[in-house]
Image (tube, rainbow, N blue to C red; front, side):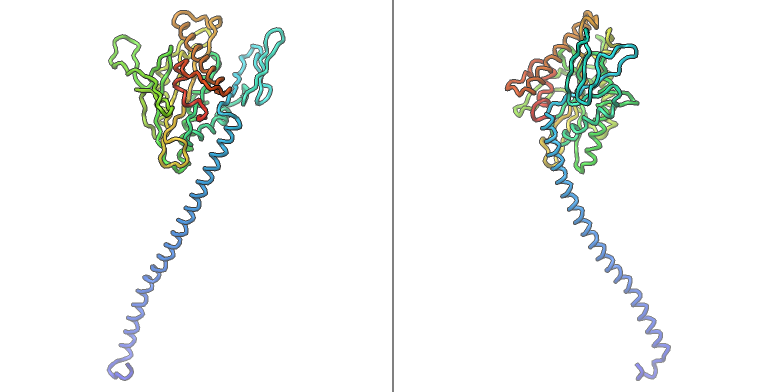
Length: 368
């Protein structure tokens, strides 16, 4: 270029300026390429870490299921808790807790009897303390096991408070529903939940999610008759029972409150609002993405049993007497089934009542 006399220094400086401008324009592209390659490498590393963490989660879930099953094997598939109701002021303490597993009943003539349970809840025990002992069963239900939780006892002893609770002190049912959706959300698997609710009144099955008129002239058609069907694989199903898919706790609780409004209750000498039936909530759980589940679809039963009654105490007559008798018969059948299961007898008398027929596949050895 120095040989070209017509090329001035000014022209050379302009060429240099153009070259510098071109270089400055190319540098960002180079930086972008460099940053892109770095981002791709970082994304690849993150994906690798996520895969490692996912494998760890699967291994931990397998260990958790094994530990939970070992716990159930040690404690037994049937676990019995005793909750002592607070004593009314002025009454003598006839029932007292000795420790966390034993309670004593004080009888007349200074006699007493001691009974042992898997857990004894003192009168001061909270609703949360009661549910903490039950929560592992909720996790077992998400693993694909049929499960059943029920409150059993004499009329007026507080079973409905334990199961249903109040707005301020929610019971087992609302806490179980909340825990079910919470654990499902934390599991990284997709679950499908369906809600059903019925009662067994005087030996008849009644759907609590369909309108029932108490008068002869009703604007609603008669609901279809519910019948218990047993499949060849041993699963029990209730034909014509309304089943509604629920996506969260709020939907399930709205259905629960709706069903509670249709329950059969009445006043007796023992209880102003005595349950005259067995109230049964069924939550069906399905998942195709969760590995190692025992069943593709399983169910969790939450049952507020009618209370056992003594005619001498309730002074029941007529309809109330027949209701109490039906409740006592079904509770006796349930007791026979529980005893046969605990004794590992070959024959389990499920067919002796509608209650035990409905719960057949949720009380056996493959249930929690």
